[in-house]
Amino acid sequence: MRRVYFDHSGTTPVHPAVAEEMYRYLTGENFGNPSSVHYYGLQIKKKIAEARDKLAQALGAGSGEIVFTSGGTESDNMAIHGAAYTNRNKGNHIITSAVEHHAVLNTVKALGKQGFDITILPVDRYGMVSVADVAAAITDKTIVISIMHANNEVGTIMPVAEIGKLARERKIIFHVDAVQSFGKIPVLVDEIGCDLLSISGHKIYGPKGVGALYIRKGTRWKQSLFHGGAQERLRRAGTENIPGIMGLAKAVELVTANLVQESARLKSLRDKLIKGLTSRIEHVSLTGHPTMRLPNHASFLFKYIEGESMLLSLDLKGIAASTGSACTSGSLEPSHVLLAMGVPPEDAHGSLRLTLGKDNTEEDVDYFLDVMGPIVEKLRDMSPLKD
Image 1 (cartoon, rainbow, N blue to C red):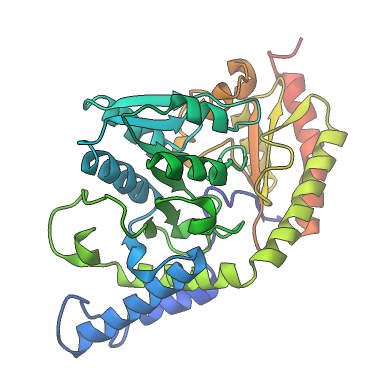
Image 2: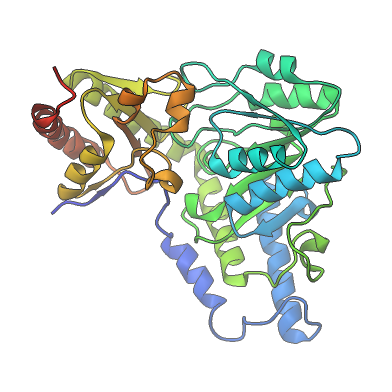
């Protein structure tokens, strides 16, 4: 049976060159603890510095502004908690949007229970937050704004550069969750104007369990989540995940080397997928912004069908897809992103997310389009939702 993987926003396969790089740090003499002062430790310390340089260069940052973490969730938590508590003497107001990943949204909500004043901004029907709404929400107590670069469920790219400009003018710390955008579109911290930025390894053909947080030099951020040793310049205690860090650095090197060409290729496949699906099947609509979206991301609403049924039917045909965020796939609740966009709950259950990657081809798209029509017809014939 043909196998097609269309869930790259959920996770990506580890690139063979990344796996090879990681293996070097799981075997042989590359086992030292970088906190040790002997030969083995110093060699690893040097390699971590080189990995940090690679990531910094990709972001247009300084190497001292990069902190290695366990992934996007930790980076988001570190960023928001650290900025909020470090700057609590200046204010207690935090702004975010209703379509953020739960790593951001639930962190902000938790802070709301700890005495912080939170504003969760609405979005338009494309899932985009308004810069004017951000400006209107700012008070003299606002200390943190956290807005994602691109939405994981519908692919919409947010106006982060404009929000960053606004935050700089008001001297407010600006955090950007770039977990979905990094490696797919240019992510340069000075162009965005952010003070804090999160990325994750397993979204860019790197390993799971490793990521990074960019902290701009001079940003008031000193509240670490962990208490322990002096690793990561006292910003993240705990012995470093050496194989993970080296795998992340290799993945960053690979995705940034071919970013422009690969983004164009994926956009072409994405557009073919969108056009083919919406022209062949009735009662299907694209979700997210029609143009300001990630080049590999296509998401849809199918009326009269539940997303779970589509996923199971596609899996039987060898196609892996998603109804939204992998972190909420076990939930029976409709997507908070779609609801925030004004999608009725009964329609939100009929969502399908297709996210393309480096190994996908036109043949994969053709195969999907050929099998999807009969699947939809069969499910609608069985559906009690259809009149």
